[in-house]
Image (tube, rainbow, N blue to C red; front, side, top):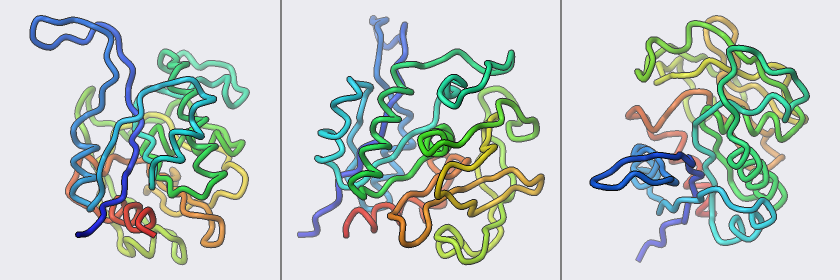
Amino acid sequence: MTVRPLIGVSTYLESGVRWGVWELPAALLPAGYPRLVQQAGGLACMLPPDAPERAAAAVARIDGLVIAGGPDVDPARYGAARSPRTGPPAPERDAWELALIGAALATGTPLLGICRGMQLLNVALGGTLVQHLDGHAEAVGVFGGHPVNPVPGTRYAALAPEKTTVPTYHHQAVDRLGEGLLPSAHAADGTVEAIELPWDGGWALGVQWHPEAGEDTRVMRALVAAASR
């Protein structure tokens, strides 16, 4: 019997979520994330915000880690003043997910950051963010799409060597790259659309777009394959 690797996915933490007769705080995740993990051959489990000191224990029990999209990273995390166009902070998520990223990097656990997750990976390694850019979200609550160009010789280019149109919805992006990270895809306007550690630096990849909202499973399949090893 094939053993599927266990892939932990970080979650939202929201108040006032309503389902049925209930309206309660909820740790939740759009279904596209676990479905993508499953389609790629993994078993998905949710990692809701917890005390940061428990992150290492959580990462020790999984084979791969996905940091999901979500709210803007608090600019204080990268030493910047808050822009008027930056969204409300999510302190529990910032603390927990930065701790998860740190634990994954320390142990060599394969890591995929999606949108906010890519931005947090950059911040975790000392990078900064552009707090607002236009043209990467078509309408509120609607995924758009634009092409990204891989950087030859990178891990991402090995997965997707051609120009690819990806599902996109973001208004923040990488500014100064974190220590050791390489850009591995760009949008037509020059925005960094993917980042990664070099081949000898462990398996860590961040993508600015939302693969869980599309049909291309290559990025998640690569994470699951790395987690299987």
